[in-house]
Image (cartoon, rainbow, N blue to C red):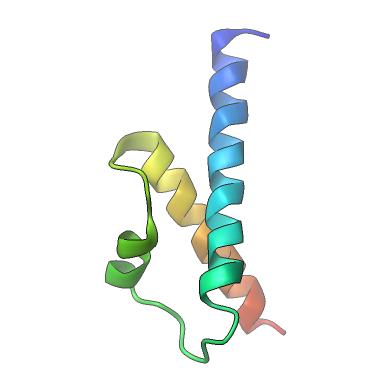
Length: 67
């Protein structure tokens, strides 16, 4: 595996963490969280990891709203 592959894999796992966090935090919520609230949940300080975690969280929230 190359460094780029490792980074891609790591970021995919971080996105999955965001997805899982949304499942935990938003299971009983009826209102979608705003950007500030999502940022408060995000454990990553910045960069690509923070963005990917937030993307996973938002994707999960969107899926929950579709049910």
